[in-house]
Image (tube, rainbow, N blue to C red; front, side, top):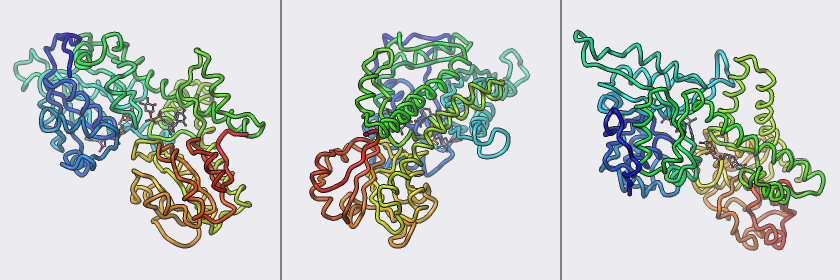
Length: 478
Ligand code: NAD
Ligand code: UDX
């Protein structure tokens, strides 16, 4: 599997042991692919969350804590060979030549910068763990998405623990190099993105450490795709990439609303502009607004940084991308209410899809959360079907337990058929492939009429839905 010809030796000698702190959506899949492609490197993924580690160790691969197409096969190949998952954080750090910090960096909820700045408490805690436990020379790699200049903080924490190799009185010498290596994988395509990345970005000021990390990726990533920058460019490139991608989605959603008002069709507009090679076709799908743990958090972080450096106009520019996204989600909920004769109180609505995108079980910042909450606020009775999201997760996200009857209540449905029974409308909120081939002739007779289909993802077969007797609305279609 590996092609060692791309891997160059470093001043540290080859990396033999990697520890990754954080067994989440990034740490788990990224380390699984590194272990798969580098059979000579021992990879240990550690986390304080014992139930998450237990799930990574579950013999039943369908119960891994992260659902990603192809991930089960990668884990099956390496787990127990050179990939392990453990709660023994200190021991794994001590044994490692290279430690990845892949912990969560959510938006701060209180204190200075609340609602915008990243909460760095988990990064600081893991850097302190490394400082306390590392042995010899350790390369510390920032894998988490971080505000520009966070490496300074990590370096300062590690420097306090650094023991000079020439100091005979000290215990074992202990030194560190800090690198930034942001992750660009998208959920749902994580394994493919990791196996065939557009680029790997390494920022740092220690050439030997940079080459050591480049040689790990060199096992499978072509040399020309491994980019080297200074630390700050690397940290900022990650925030910038996410801001640009999210900005395209807000832009097309803004145009989609104009299409609905004017009779244009946002899919035709997206195709027409996407054929311009300067614009390109990707990330131009109008929908219910972007979700996921990254876009909103990273743009808000960018907004905070711009404000911190006195760039208020730049901050306002990026803030508008997030505001338009929230507006789109509320707009869609309002639109459903308007089409259902101005009230959904006590009406049954089938919601198809709860994950923030297809092929993931992740619901963080999912558009479905805000849209469902708005409909619940209006008194609707929701039956939510998602092939990968559990009822427990929906309870957490919606802030209320399931309830079969009443106003402003929701319950999970096991199948689309169960969800549509006596419903006045179906609202598609995630683009699961199975929603493209729903048998409307079988579903629609179960509904109360007149009945609607609101397709916010443009996945349904509208002709079939119409033929079966539904009135249809699709995002961005005038
Ligand atoms: P996550 O919440 O799924 O996982 C983070 C894990 O770190 C958790 O399991 C938590 O228990 C663990 N953790 C926190 N502090 C710890 C400590 N001191 N010691 C041991 N374990 C600790 O988060 P994620 O989605 O994997 O994201 C991780 C980072 O990667 C974030 O900065 C995120 O912005 C970035 N990122 C995420 C994605 C994505 O698609 N999810 C993509 C690119 C980058
Ligand atoms: C994103 C970045 O793509 C990835 O590079 C980064 O590492 C993490 O953040 P992710 O959030 O996992 O990845 O998925 P992505 O495919 O970017 O989708 C984000 C949201 O935008 C989803 O809700 C998706 O449905 C939405 N989206 C995406 C659209 O509405 N329209 C599009 O054209 C593309």
